[in-house]
Image 1 (cartoon, rainbow, N blue to C red):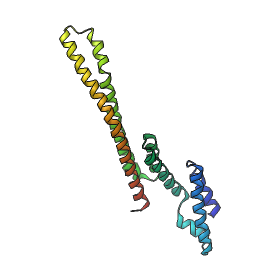
Image 2: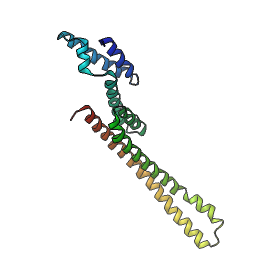
Image 3: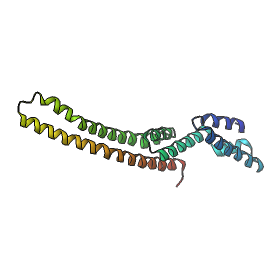
Amino acid sequence: MKKNEFINQLRAQLKDLPAAEREEIISDYEEHFRHAKEKGRTDEEVIKRLGNPKTIAKEFTADYHLGEAKANHSLPSLTRAVFASLGLGLFNLILVLAPFVAVVGFIFSLYVLSGAFVLTPLVAVAAFAWESSVAKAIFNLFVTLILAGAGMMLYAGMNRASKAVIRWFTRYLQANLKIIKGEK
């Protein structure tokens, strides 16, 4: 493989990144080749040292999406970062996808629970017509109002907890990526 082939493969693999980011990465790698040429190394030696362009692109893509998740603190950004890091190997499939699915499933279930609690007064009002005892109907109404209040508080708490979980999981992904790259 020659320099141009390597650069073209790298550019093709980085297609999901913004153009400015992609061109900066490409220029860095072209600089590697220039420095190596000055030191008398061949393209093949440089490519052997740099590694597979597909693997390099996966690492850059995961880094980019992780940075986006860190900046945005949103579930879509975090999801893109998770799936970008899954491309780095089977190791990540186990250590990233399983906790991600578990945490997102747990958070989703609590949001559904809060929604169900908020909607309970509608059920109480509908059941009010069929209740034979007024005292029982009023008791049910107050219980459902308490559940609705608990649902609203749970929803507010889940909004804060979701943001904290997204920040934590972003740091977890970052640490995982460092392990894969062999950094400390």
